[in-house]
Image (cartoon, rainbow, N blue to C red; front, side):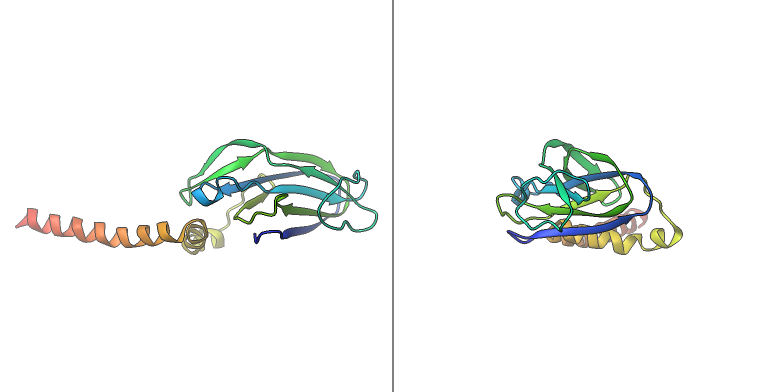
Length: 166
C-alpha cells in the first residue's frame, strides 16, 4: 500500500450472512510500526469520520488495529502481526471494505475475508507458484537465499555421499 492510499474491496451479499475479516502485516523490520485500519462501509451503518468519501446512503464502522499475536503461516513459512478479528452479521446488499493507514504510512498487508479454506486440485497444482509469489512479496532477499540454498545443500549432500561411497 502506497503512503496515503486507500484500498477498497467491493462485495455483494445476496442473503444475510456473517462477515469475518482480519488484517495481517508481515513480520519484517520495515513494517514494525505499520498498522493499517479496516473500515466496513455499507447501508445502515453509523456515519463515522473516515479520511475518504463515503457513497451516499452508507455509513462506516472503523476497526482500528489492535495487536493480537504473531501468526506463523506454515505453508509459506511466513510470519505476520495479526490484528483482532472482525465479525458481524450483514444483511443482503452492496458492501465495501476499505484499508487505510491513518498516519499516511505505506506498507504491506494481507486482508483475510472468510474463515474456510477450500483447496481444489488446481490450487494444489498451483501451490509452487503461489508459494514463490507469496515469499517474493514477503521478502525478496529471503526468497533468493532459500532458492540458492536448496541446490547448494543438495550439491553438498551428493558430494558427501560420493566421498563416503569411495
